[in-house]
Length: 471
Image (cartoon, rainbow, N blue to C red):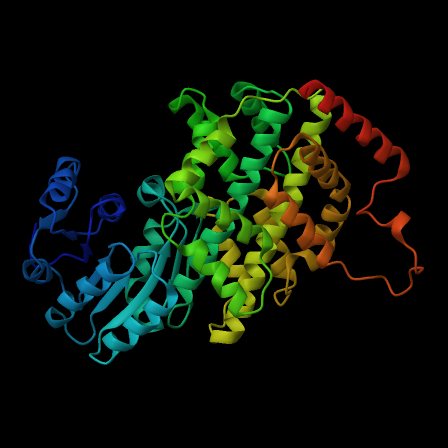
């Protein structure tokens, strides 16, 4: 291999960096891999399998391996580690070179770094790459922002390594400055919200119905063939074989590790407040994750997912179907919250985002679902739609299922099972309902958010029977 002609440099390969280097080299590119940790370099060398990767443990030698204009992708943890690496790299680079920050950077840090590097003629791309080790090796959703000239230089690499859906690469240039990292931040927040919703359906089936994990796996398998299907449900089902059938442990890992490896979701909740946006489902999901970030919280979360079941006396298949329909409302609301935040941010920060393009990129991530494809289709017809809940199809899906969500919430409350994200989803739905100016003053009986008399009586009976079974 010609050591002066590497197409791209990877700085920081410990963790997901090695998988990304393997992915890029596997698509015919020559890669220079730098890390100060010799153990990480040795691990990469042990699995290169003939790929054109040159490893080095000093930055000056690393830069000398790169062809001009130099392209350096940084995969250091967000915050000070990125600043330190950029400070060390910048004097070794020239005007016209490109740095790609492919970590989970806070978008305002990306703006600050871009200005500093731009003063020296070095362009910075802030690129969000979704998923963990599996995604970076097999193809991920890639969200790029920064100077368009920099994307023109490196876009062909990102297109090669991106996930493909129906042959379409899930990558795009989204806008100037920190647009890519902002979209990545909201992506993590939506994923956290969906994961919390799924965790609550698990808790209701496990403790409310006394179902074991194998039975819950069968339910999730059936849901995968329905309107509530998602890649997150698929991850749970596929991992059961690797974790001795323990869905609770899988959900714990997803909540704590998978969907938000950094602080992206928490940043998104703070941004929503700054931009006066309502994200109740995402907010409560972040709060639950924060609980899991301290030792006492970890103990609480483990107990929540592993507590002795409360046996529900009733038709479990009916409740499971209602759970699925309730989950659908939560999913629609969570996507709506994330996309509405992106629309507000695009206007505020002048990103000029195409929300349809964002949704299409997300199909290559853990957010992949039939619902997301429906959102893409709706945005294609109505590109300026402020919120997917305004689409007639989604409005009908939610209004026709809100009684199921209420049924689940009332049963969970009667059994003492917390469902904060599902409850927040109901609040978001109800707060976005516009009163019908032609309706009569007292429209309570006709409103879809209230039970009819027979249904209310039946549900009260179910709760009383369940309470007796607890005693």
